[in-house]
Image (cartoon, rainbow, N blue to C red; front, side, top):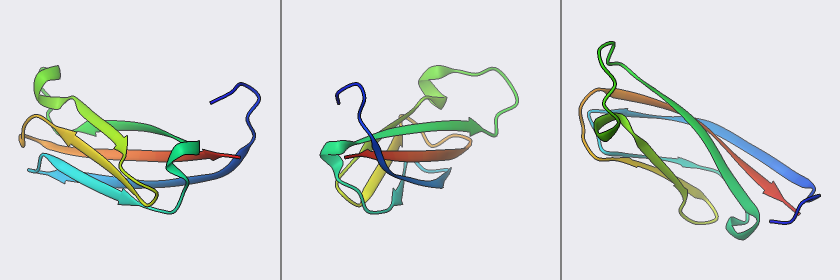
Length: 86
């Protein structure tokens, strides 16, 4: 991705991992010209353990983003954006 690139579209959504190790979101973008940005929160009000709560995200293809984590403990809410450039 070159500096000065112009934004074509921004797709956004949310996904929830309820006792699951993966979740997906969908849209339509060019995977080779896009970047994924996301945040997540979890339902555990206790100590945060990165090995349990850490979420990974990837643009799987031109229509899907996939989020995974190591365990199925706690609920995780993900808010994501795929920014597509020209």
